[in-house]
Image (cartoon, rainbow, N blue to C red; front, side, top):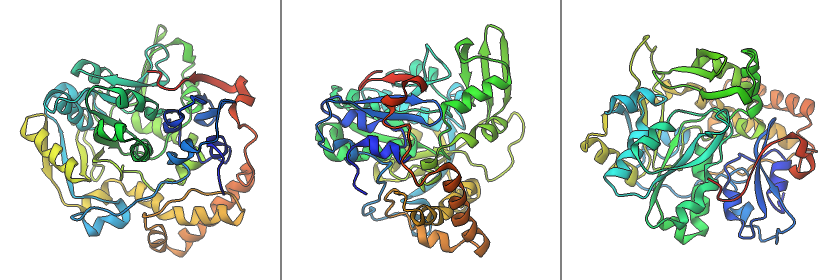
Length: 424
């Protein structure tokens, strides 16, 4: 299917909410709107000139690999994309390590880039200070700013709406985002030489999908808390893996991270269920949790770190040599043991796409992920389940039809926020 603009992509539930389209529109015709039940979605206004730039940078419609650099691990590539080396480690700074979601590696790397590589800043998502149960794209230029916005955010975030800040900066910056955000960044770099020259490093966090804002609202409701009452909301961190903690004037509510994620993951939209990249394959460095063993209570955080490019490998080792990270190389087999759920999801995607194709629904272009090869590794039962389960959900939720909720300007009553291009 040919998409006229990103309204079409959102209408067919293929939007990932990265925000790259808002940056790409030279006429500022694209606004980003947090549709509570879905996520951050584009709204294309009447000033749209039909240039197609928004579609060109959209990873929701097309997330595809090109040719990989020489030196990637051939045993990992079909399941995990380009990987040079697998490391385990943590931030050397105890405070960074404690506040981070795992071992604070992403924050430590960004801090190294600012303080030792001379980068202008770090563009990433963080809690909105006015509405801390939502996210806002942030520009951090110091240790204090990075620490104040550390920790994973299991709700919609669109850091690519900050690409204009990077593009206009006097010197290069580091970008931190989910795998889809980094994919959007790479597509944006391909059409902007200025942005490309201002992107020094891309760091990705591992991601199993982004729950909609409704997930957070419903979880708060279980503790009889209204979003408007929230003064602080952390999804994890302050220990490994940490707790989901909501603070308000009425008191603090806290539950283990895994309990909160078990609740929130049910709110992930369709496109997240079709995403094969859970580990940041387009990044220079990606970071997640080493879940290959049980974590003992009170154990300090550790990060699983993948060097995906030569640049990423250089920065990772330089950060360790400069005393920002403590790392050790580990057996690559621990990647699968740590992230078995992400591999299981990847293996099911070819069948899920087949189920949607049988209903003549548009599906994203996903080249270079060895999807059929991964799907063949499933049992006969799992193969059938990947197709039949998708067919059942698609029929029940009418995924074979264009959503009536888009363009989103037609459902303003459901809107939580409106963000204009470049608003940080």
